[in-house]
Image (cartoon, rainbow, N blue to C red; front, top):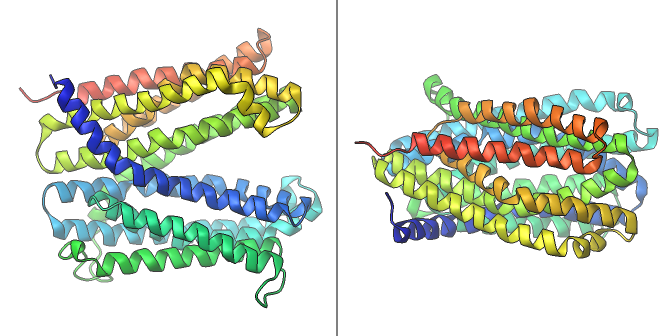
Amino acid sequence: MASPQQLIREAKSTLALAVPIMAGQLSQMLMGVADSVMVGRVGVVPLAASSFAQCLLSVPFLFGIGLLQCISVRAAEAHGAGDRQTTGEVLRHGLALSILAGLALIALVLVTATQLHRFGQPPEVAAGARNFLILVALSMLPMFMAMSLRQYSEALNHPWPPMAIMLGSVLLNIVLNWIFIYGHLGSSALGLDGAGLATLLARIAALAAIFLYVLRARRFEGALPAQWLLRWHPERLRSLLKIGLPTAFQLLLEVSAFAAAAVMMGWLGTVPLAAHQIALTCCATAFMFPLGIAMATTIRISHALGGAEPARIRTIGLGSIALGGIFMGVSAVIFAFGGESIAHAFVADHEVARLAAMLLVVAAIFQCCDGLQVVAAGALRGLSDVTIPLLTCIFAYWLIFLPFAYLVAFHFGWGPLGIWAGLALALGLEAVLLVGRFLIKSQPPR
């Protein structure tokens, strides 16, 4: 049994790795926010077209993010074992996987771009979204490649330079938006197309910067591929996909469940849907903190696994789970007591703000569960245990949440609160099942 001092020590180490990872995750959110704010000044139609295009891209984008989580797991295992040659091979094959994922997404979007009129949007929105959709889809290829390199660097305990590069790409994107959207420094005013071009160029620059950093940094000497393009190993790709595919599908199922919640809110009217969006935005922002802890936990447990230190695995995981619970406990208190002020910061409509504040009270109840389940899932991913968490996700969201939420919201008259009560139930179940699974898998050898 780990002592409190050991748990605190491991939690501090996890937090030190998690902070730059959190900042890197938030930087990608900031790029989308910056695009929306700057495009919104051009007009309502470009803003609507931007929102429509980003919505279409969200599913394949999230699938790609989940798929590439395998790189940090396998690279961290090899690093923990002191096998620098294998670490380089993980990077090489991970980059190949990111290129394949990026090209598949581009091909899918090019086909979709010819069918935008079938999505029931106003004609001017569908027409305005086409070029922006294609440009942002093209930017996913360099973004996936940069993500692979970033995860490699993080897995080798060097998260700060990639974080700085990611934040720099956000600033570059803002500058390029100013140039291309509004027509400064000799450029034509391209409007929404300019935002897409700015995103593409900023992500290419981020890829170039992080690739040069990895190639030139002395800390990676001996841990880079001896050759980049020859002698591919199918078993190495299968090893990556064994982690990446279940993680990608788990992420898709979770996002789809929240999308289903939004659809059900829409059935209840515009006020519930608006309140749901406000509350969900607050929860998603708070979620970035335990998500960063989960990603750091994956890396540290993979290090311990690769380094044949099974006794540390349980201590690392429990310290991280407690850390995730503490972070979300703080956000729960903020939501419970400051929900009304938070809601009024988003919208002036009193009815929407009042309902959003009520939903944030429900969110306060399940915040700790959300922190526990995501960190426990990250700990299990570090143990290469991804199939059971996927099945747990299917059970909690699709077999429990959806029927329960529909029943209490529409048949028992709970309305919007019923849908969020269903989310609370699903997250609570996931927290219990995943933490229990980790306790079983991390039992020290006798």
